[in-house]
Image 1 (cartoon, rainbow, N blue to C red):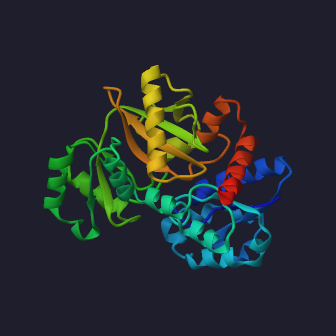
Image 2: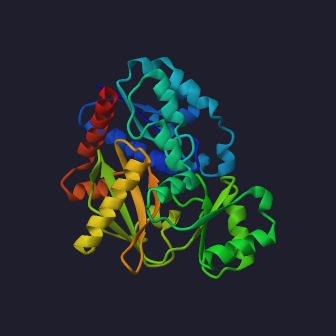
Length: 342
């Protein structure tokens, strides 16, 4: 079987996708699959790039650097002849152009099976406001939120209204980014702080989401083929679970399975399944929650393509029930092939 691992890309989460793609390539090769590494940032020229060149991520670290690449590259990449021989695509792309349905729609047009959720679920889940509206309508607890457009970025009355409706403790973030990129937590309701946070987030999306902060424990729930994995608690001892804490060794403690009562664990798992189904997900996903002092899980978001190195959260939870990383990658490939048959 020939598997294309599509990784890297041109989103601000390129570095994370490079690390995940390298891990998946190594895992699948260890099982003797024929693997073709594909970085859509290079368009149809990806075959001329060595894996070492693809992994050279230093020049891609800044959002301005990424803007030099165009989404047209994705079209040229997937249209290339090499995909005529591909049996299935393992997508390891995060953020824009990876989780938002774009790459999925191109693969649909080519009739090539791929891992993870379909176009609609991918697009819906990557739009935080749209997904929260769906979840709220389904009775899922999710923090109250408001949206701020760039046109209101200097409107002081808008900031006062935010503070009045959502409180002084706020989370400001882009509407369609992951890995906490562009995210700020505000704990004092200071109007200058709110303004600065919105300016930062607006570099990545318009509009920007401003959310009520929920005090509590951070939980995450992986789902593979509809099966809920052991719940993980994420504990940071300084600050919040931001990009640095996610990807710097020793900054964060992970408890798997989380130390929860049976009732809370069961209810949180049930809510994760509801979120997964409401958004129409396939294959695998990860649902992030805040557990408040009353034992209520508040859904923060669902990731249709969560981090995927051997040390990432979903692989960590899978390992807890005896699924090693190569086996997990193979399972996800098989889910993609079975989904195509259905």
